[in-house]
Amino acid sequence: MNLDRIAQLVADGLMPLIRTDFSADDAWHRVVEAVSQESDGVADGDEYAAQQAAISDLSFDSVTPETLASAWPREHPGYVILADHRSMREATSGEDPTVVFVDLSADDEDEEEFGWVFGQAFRCVATAAASIDDNLSIANMDFAEFADAVDDDGVFRGF
Image (cartoon, rainbow, N blue to C red; front, side, top):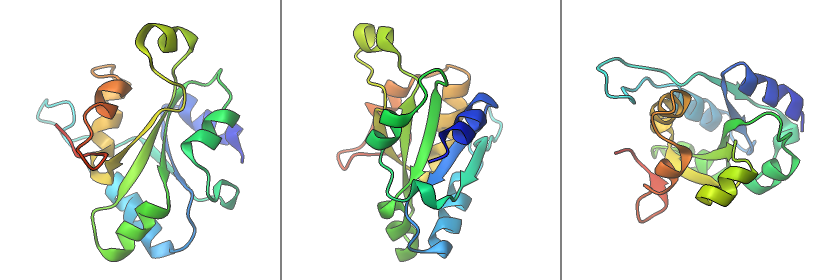
């Protein structure tokens, strides 16, 4: 895994969308398209696109939030999105694909004070990525607010 490259994207203000399943190229393209859709995520009447960078690198095959967090350079806090097996299966079947948002920003103080855990993750519909990215980037909402707002099936679909 080339985490230095991913960490640099985070430092540059981009949200890495990392492919972790390589079973279907068409599905990957549908996931990237869905994540790239504009949204009025900060409710100001303007449409915003996630500032994301799509990463399709076989060294990330089968990476999970846990394995990514355990290897992540903690001096580069940020967030990443994983397009995993479920994402590809949903995109292949014509469903709205979901992706996994991963928090790689929590530090020891956050964990102690707020109970936030480094590497915490939640699943969201891919079309909600821009809204989440926008709100996190301006500190309008924090990661835990999104993670706590998942539906009964464990997927965040928006507020």
